[in-house]
Image (cartoon, rainbow, N blue to C red; front, side, top):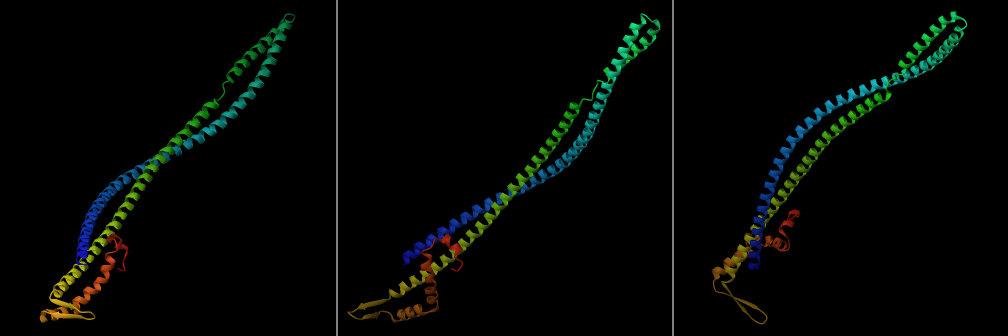
Length: 285
């Protein structure tokens, strides 16, 4: 039993050293994660400021584009009406021009017999030519397609502004996700560090229990070596070589220290059947 306890004591010491090494590594990883978190927070602050600035500028640009589209819509409607009016005037002008031109021809033909008709013919011919000039000038329509193209350009500009706002927002969200992940990682390190510290404390406690129990067994062995046993068929006879030693032996096994050690031994039975790092969850132990 002494040998078994000694091996267990050495095993507990190895567990404690391993635990200390793991804690040291976890603390180093946590410190690095905290440093990264600070850097990410700084970057996120800059990205957020850039997003706010970009969003304000792009929103202003969008408003200007929307105002421009509204003006172009009004211009488009006015252009449609203007083109319709031109079309109506052109149709009326063509009718008048044709009638005047026809009348001038009639007057010209009649002038061969009645020279006085040359005057109306000249006037009507001039009127016909003038009407033709007006009709040609009224063919210049408002370019509605150009207005529509300008409206589409403004809509495209709005889409570009919205895309830039969305890209800036995604950058902020991405940085925030990185910060959340680092925060969770740091919290996980803290939990693990606490658990391993509890394991190390528990291991140290187990070492103390084992050490105390080993002392008891060693002292008990020394005391028993001073006694001499003689066995008969049905009885056990004890020959005491040293009455003083025997008295000390009796006091030892019935004393307070012995009682405390024997009570601690009930835990030894459990210690030998458990993994030390599984003991972290055994709060009752």
